[in-house]
Length: 217
Image 1 (cartoon, helix red, strand yellow):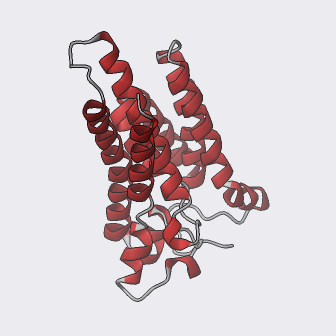
Image 2 (tube, helix red, strand yellow):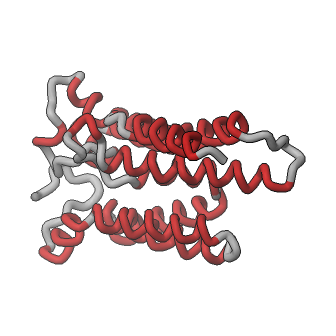
């Protein structure tokens, strides 16, 4: 398979993932979301700063980036290959391209080139990726997120719990798909790393619970 096809997939997915919807939505209202609340461009801070409708819109748009990137990766795999739908290797190739697209969509969101490579934490975009790649594993992650959120009222705790649950579930459900398992584990570690400031606030007792207007820094 020509390496150019993978490069195009990665580049297209990165550029799609790098669209900073939270930043753009706040900018349309004359607000630099990076300077208010937690300073994050993701849905949680958008909800606190711009309100629930805007926050939900950012959540859905960020998730859509991951999903659409995977779908486009699938199209590229079909275009770049001589295999048809009934060949044994087509499904494997399709998933490989979708996974590459998913990786770079998350990296685009987390390290967007439009904001000096500073972006969000990748939870919603990762959810969109796994809606395309492993929806049942995503469902487990969503349930874990909701339970952790209900128990603690910390969005960050729910996100971290989901980042742990998703790789475990993928390993259990698809133990022979080492590429998917390893990538999912890496994305989970990245998500936890991106929450390092939240972990510091949790340990200091200054993390904001769901429903609070502003987040302490």
